[in-house]
Length: 478
Image (cartoon, rainbow, N blue to C red; front, side):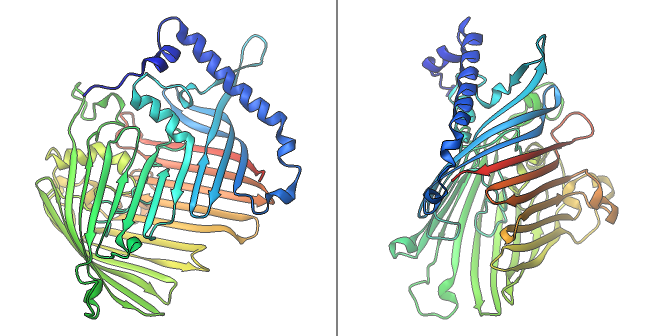
């Protein structure tokens, strides 16, 4: 089925001699809107009393961000409006950001606007939705773990079941250059007083429908009085990626001159059984078996909390040849093509027994938390297989200080590192993804410094890592 072409939009943006004129008109309209808003800005912020109990919110932001563009690294100034509405468990927010830069010219006052933020590359439905859907920063109802949870927009930690197939996936890997608009939807039968079944679903990008999956689970003994076993949960998960080479430049990952094609499909079953739920100690056991096309792997694990503040998790993994645990993980969008080559047998990983251990500390209602996990094989890699990331330990860490715990300061630090051959590799950017967000708050004003480093094996030039950074000041008006 071909791409859908919306002729009315095509007439506006893409057809004939009108293209440049209409693009300029759109850019001028957007610029005029922002100027008009700032003319009336004082009227929004005069009455502080009206802010109390107001379901509406509005923020503005000014800053500078470095992007990795086709021409190289470019610094753009940014001007953003972030209106939002909150009604109980429902919330919706917009992200209307204008990136621009001054280019000089004869009068020293010319500037460019980043057109790809506002103008689709073509008139296809895919490109139109890719540009305009992300203007919705989020739409949500409820919170993860509640009987009904809906989240649209940027999704940081998508997990299905025990996380052995999809665990911690984030569709934010290409921020700030590219924002994806995804969907996470969970429905538990407890909502209808029918706790026997439930469903979890996920779509990474609603404009593309490339990566999507779901899990159906049942609690067959929940209506009985059998101790412990009545809480048994059994589930089945299917996740597929129909465009694993979508983010590869020109689609040719292996360099043979032809665009790579294919798809990835992973399916499996899982069980989960809570054993203890004491004030000072919780314990849940779980197990998975998964099939990555012809490759099979399994896992036995346990997890919980000690003294309410120490989370822990441990796993023993039995992995067959060319099986990749947590195929759809937090950095999947960067490793899509590499994993697909292994999945289809073009790469080669001998089977092995592996492990995972994670722990940390979380206090003050999780407002201050540190969690780290390390996984890898028990054996050393074979001499002919030294360059495969699956043969070495993999470290993930997240350190967060939530807003308002320490007056005027909050932050998020994340670290994901593959290819840990020796201790010194922890500071090697190969296989590393680093995220830093530092925030200083004074009343309604927030200054944010952010930095990301991402290792992208799909890049053809060496070194294969990219950095983005920025400084932004924002003001919450109401």
